[in-house]
Length: 86
Image (cartoon, rainbow, N blue to C red):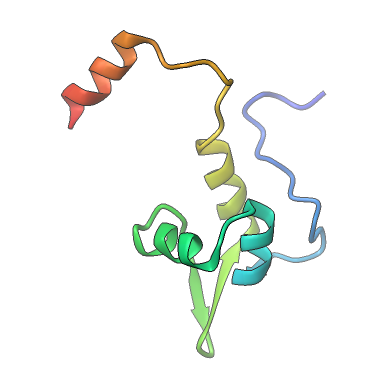
């Protein structure tokens, strides 16, 4: 059994370390515009080679894990803490 902190295994492209923008878009089920926004906001790290943009598999797994939700609404105290931190 995997631990809860283990990074997500991306099975769509199991043998690739670097994923193309198209592959990342398909995994996240978002548009290119949304993907580019996450990249430009530095939420999702990317690397560029020969004019092409790639995302490391581990970076994508970490991004997905960071945006994971248990489906419950956040508690009011947590929302207040986050608001005070800003």
